[in-house]
Image 1 (cartoon, rainbow, N blue to C red):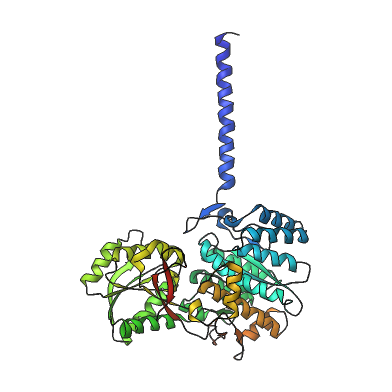
Image 2: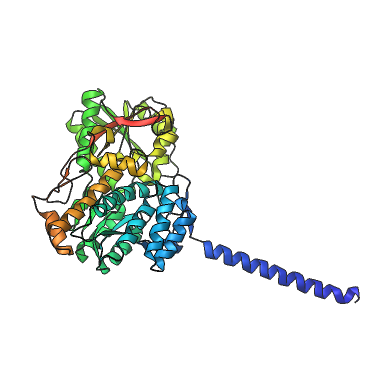
Length: 467
């Protein structure tokens, strides 16, 4: 064959090869677009395409970072209805990844599948903040393990549906509608962020399905209706405790505030704290430090606060912009006394903040060292290999409340709401009894903790109760 004849054939071959490679690349990228995201801790987690929610009782892998071959095999068996095989695989996976709450929930779900289970849901931000999602799931999983080992509720085992809402208010509302429409769901633990709860709350109220948030503390949540509850104390208690500590203990009186203008919870605490500090004789130094502002210059804001006479600084981030708050702490270099909201009770705060967050004081609902030894703490250490934080405790309390409400009446949504709304309702929680005010708020207060050098967290610093 001549070179003249070979040239067109060679060009055609190159074109076909490029088309195949390009098509393959397009398929791969489109297929995986939206399936992997990175949370605040840098961990890759599986979410769903187009940021939509996923509900799973054991048929889907929602937390891929803890996946083992045995966990994946268990999910496959669960999906096929082979529950004995699923149980065996999930048990083996837990021996390899004992700290994985998703697998423990799926294991108990498989055991409950053939027993006409009582079913509730938990909504967590797997794609938005995996660590916080796990903290909440551990509290729910701990109740399920406890209840099912004791024979269930009126002879029926408890089954948990896990749902991801990414802390997105729009997705949260869609999730809420799906759960309302699923008549097998008797109650919901969630949502995490106040904005997600505010997005979903009206749907639960209209659909007459009880929702108990373990972590949302915006003031407006109290107005959503009589099907919406929460096991986190009122944000007013946090504000009062921080203010009184600042004025009476630290002997400071001029405080600047860094907050998140896009988050209802942050605005609520800023408002409540401002009222409390004025009532206690202090003053707020206005520096317009907005943690939601991508152009925020932390060093400038700290310098401005000091120039205007501030002697302390309150940080109120959301869980999605903790890094911005840590940036302010790092710019502060321990010049102003730091106060913080419960959102800062995270591993990230200790790991990234280090000495710049030392001695910062936070108002939180719970700490393991602030309560005496009890069954919750002992079981948590046995299940998870160490101490848990307030989100796990609050999720445990929310799940225990739903379980107790089911035990008190009939296994239907209206009976659960009636039980929780009864002024005499109470159930033992992680520390104290869980009781609700007529507003649906937790009847209880907060505690103060601080950050000191320590080894428990393996960051060099620990959260401890303030002496």
